[in-house]
Length: 555
Image (cartoon, rainbow, N blue to C red; front, side):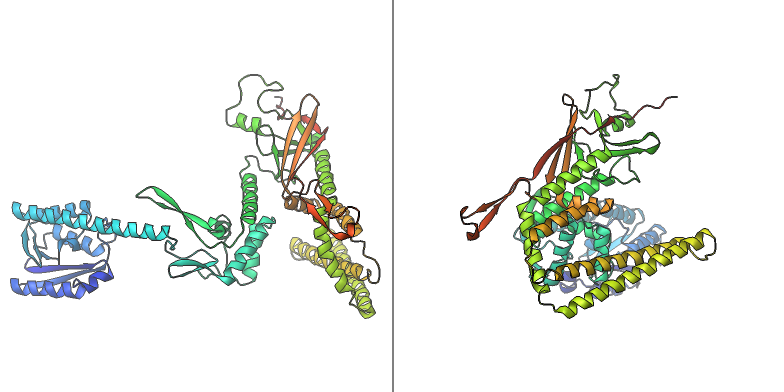
């Protein structure tokens, strides 16, 4: 095998296919050299691989060739030029050492190189350094050109974000996908959870950027946090350590994006709580301590009749070993020295929010604009529709009665052990069916109520106030969802002198004390405008629920 000429071939780009250094051309030149030497040849074809960043992990053929050199099976090696072996300085130094140590003669199109000859070795070293410099120079020019293109608004490369497509190397809004991006942001800003957003996308057959029919929660969160949708993204050139803001065509308005970010912040804070709880609390996700900024937590001990909202800062510092070594006394550390009674606080906040909503001219006008078109449309219906609705309501009521009877019979069978199967699953199915029928019945009643307004004056203001009052009949979970839609934050402080808590409720829109201004106060029919109020409302109350620190257990 020592009488063979070992021919190593490799390309790293399509450009080399065009400038005479294709794999086929390298092989033919090597065979020609073998004939000149009067010896046989063996081909080692690496194919297309980079030679600058390699550490031999991406060069399996070269590794096998070096192993054969170490075994003494190679005495003559042909490469088109030394770049074919490596441009990486460390890798090339190791290869040169292997060749010299094993007495290998290197052949190139420029001639024979004897590494044991000091002059040949010097020339080869100089050629290698020049090759590495040339490669680095091309890389730097390519990087600078790419950076300049990105600065001018060209897309940085790779798949575009969902909602866009690339035309002439620039991002362009995709009409179909952008509508779903807008819906995702609106849903999330309205406190629709990401798992529900995922179900909505999957059920509508919306494909991901990679063409998958199933969305992941991570992909949705990545979209919701990406500033590209409001008109820009930041690109950093690591070599220059320079960051530029690249403009993009916006899909989402700034207000909707910021609302979504606030929801993300609240969600992260809830998930990062150091003492997560399985109990339900109406206000924990929205309420923060006004003294130290810590998220308020809840504690319930039914055996001791304790139902408290409290600031957990001192508790967490104690767990982390950062608690004050001095004996605790009121007034030290966080000023939240008294916890809040949960039922009292929930009632105060709920009633305050409903009172503000009920008196808001903005929300009244919005309700009026929504309800009147429905009433006008309902007046087009005839008495036949009225009879059909009554029949529909009776039919749904019978369905509800049948389901209630089925649930009652099922529970009896379970207690008497006369039922086979999975009780939990059957009970879940029955409850889901009942919930669905209740929703249908509620919709039918609402449709019938609107129809009864035919040929009568519409007291839309009374309807609005009734709708607000009816929210008191919501479940606790529904109340929390409603509060999160209208309230952004609740900051609570304790006034030691007055021995009471002060709560500052921040609404998402300025509906506190908004007002209607008539164009002509004497003739109100000439029109009006509604002026914004403010976002915050302060309420106070004696809500004390005990000391705002955990009680020490007695041993």
